[in-house]
Image 1 (cartoon, rainbow, N blue to C red):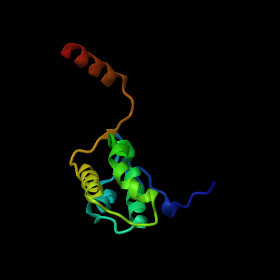
Image 2: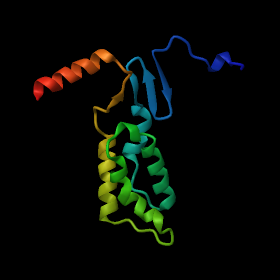
Image 3: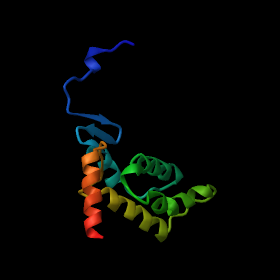
Image 4: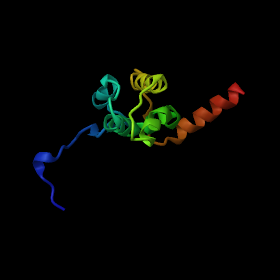
Amino acid sequence: MKLKSSKCEFRKTKIKFPGRVRGQNGIAEDLEKTEVNRKMPPPENTTKLRSFLFMVNQLAKFFTGLAGKTKPLREPLLNETSWCWHQLQQRAFDEIKADLSLTTTPVLCYYDSRSLRHYQQTLHHMA
């Protein structure tokens, strides 16, 4: 394997991947990249809808229930003979964009047994 020094970065605390940032605290959403999703207008055809769904699915692990939320958006793709965009699709589109606009996005962090024990103790005391 050959490495090109001009493309290498050393001593970095975080690395950017498409749609994600991997750092000391784990993997988080790359807010710069997802800004495109937040500002995207409603799709005008199936090609733009597929593009939006592809981008959103790249972030699926950061949002719960995404498959259910995108179901109304996948329906127009089933029948490609005519394009239809109704209130149901618009509501789903707006809801997904709102989820992308949350200021506190989840972080997938590294396993830490001490945190797990603390979490289990907290749940035990709450019960």
